[in-house]
Every structure is written in C-alpha cells, then in structure tokens.
Length: 331
Ligand code: SF4
Ligand code: MG
Image (tube, rainbow, N blue to C red; front, side, top):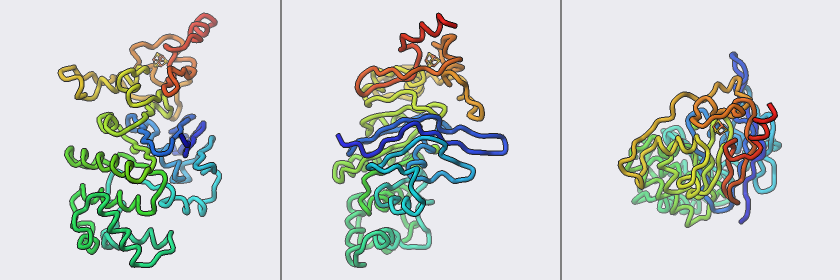
C-alpha cells in the first residue's frame, strides 16, 4: 500500500505564562492511501494538536513544532514555507472541524462558498465550478442542490450544514481529509448518517481519512486502523479488530470498558479513575502510571519501549517487554 503520510518523532509545545506545555511528545504515525485512521483519546491528549500540525495550523507563538517531521507525499510539511503550505491546504489536504457554523460564512450563499475554493485553486469557468458544486452536494446527500446553492447557512439544519462543510472540504479532490470530532456537535441519528457519508465518500473518491475523536463508538464503525493517544504520546496502534478485541495497553482497555458496546450488552461500564498528568512537567516514565491498575515500580521511572505484537499492532507498555525485568533487576 502506498504511504501518503509519515509522521516521525513529532514534538509540539505551547509556551504560556505558566511554562511550556508539551502537548505532543514524540508521535509516530503513518497513513496509507484509501484508509481511515482514527486517532482516539481524552481531551488534551494531543490528538487535535497532531492533526493541526499536519496542516501547519499551530499558532506560533505560543505554539511550536519543536522536533520531528511530517512527510506528505514525499515532502516535509514542517519545513515548507507558509506560502507553500497554503497551496496544499484545502487542495491536497482538507480539514473538517466539530462545529460546522465556524467553517461557513453566514453572509454568503452555499453556492458561493462551494465555488470559491475551486475558482481560487483551479483554472475553471464559473459554469464548471457551479456544476462541480452541485455534483458535490449530490455526493454528500443534499436534496435539490440547484435550489439549495442559492441559500444561506442558517437555512440548513446542523446535520445538513456539516454535509455542506464536507462538500467544501472535498470539492478540490484532496488526497487526505482530516476530520476533528466531526460528529460531536450533532445528535445521535445525524451522527450515524454523517459516519455513513464518510464511508461512502471514501468508497467513491478513494480519499484517505484521519478521524479524530474521543468517542470509540464513532471509530468502531469506520476506522481501518486506530491510534490511541495519551498524554501527548501514541501508546497503542492496531487495526480496528486488534484494538477492539485484543486491546493491550491498560489505558486502551480502560477506554473500552468505559464506553457502551453493542457486542457486550449488560456489561458494567467502568470509568478510568484519576486524571492525565500535567503536561507542563510530564512524568519521565509511563504517563499512565498513576492511573494504571497494573503499574510496576519501573513504570514511573522509565518510559516503556515499543513492543510489536503483530505487523499492525504495537504498544508502549512494560507489561509486554522482557526488558522490564532487566530494568527492575538492575535498579
Ligand atoms: Fe501500566 Fe506500566 Fe504499562 Fe504504563 S507501562 S500502562 S504503568 S503497566
Ligand atoms: Mg480536540
């Protein structure tokens, strides 16, 4: 499979009055053509910061990519000028956020907003842009697109607005679509419809998708692979099956036990007790130590090596590592 995105050892910090928040601390992630990768974790775990780094949308100051690389189709985005990144943004890589209203301009018609990006980036006539916009509205399931093109955002429901935002993100045929909590602001039935829409779009366009969410239920339906983040690190990655049926990291296990699952009716939900560590001064060892029911002495002192459980499944936890014994014995 063709790799279209390769993130290596990414470190992102924010400098505040209180000190430096180390939001992302050595993230490695890969994305292959045509797949959906979900990045999952509690708020503040660094998933949005990782996504924003791909679009070079880290406000600087206070933010800074301190280390690492983000290769997209062979070029390192972290090294590109802002001018070059603007050419990629919205054209090769598009992003969708939680609240569709912030992405739409209330004073412009949907038609204007859809064709704006096209006219800017592609050398096409108004008629062609219009036809393409109507085609996009069809793809995302907006009825009577000809008529709807003339309307303003407030004339659409929340779910319809998110469909329009998705159409806007796709109109320049990007290779990568990043969706940050795209269904969180919507009610449950609409959420399901939007997730189905992502699947349909992927089938029809072959776009690769990064889906960011705190909600494992969302992921269960559409992700091919899942990366679980905790305290600025990816602590486990695997296929959807591996993460759901053979979760290995105690945090992933905790996450799964804390959400309702269709395949385990009647099981008790167990919240993960405690809070994530302060990222002003992150712990040297495993950041989950304070909340981990299986923590050992070594865990608080040394960050675990990554263990590969299969070609697709990797975990950062001492429980899986023979070397833990050596560390315990030697100290
Ligand atoms: Fe728990 Fe230790 Fe594994 Fe961290 S490394 S998840 S503290 S067992
Ligand atoms: Mg977020």
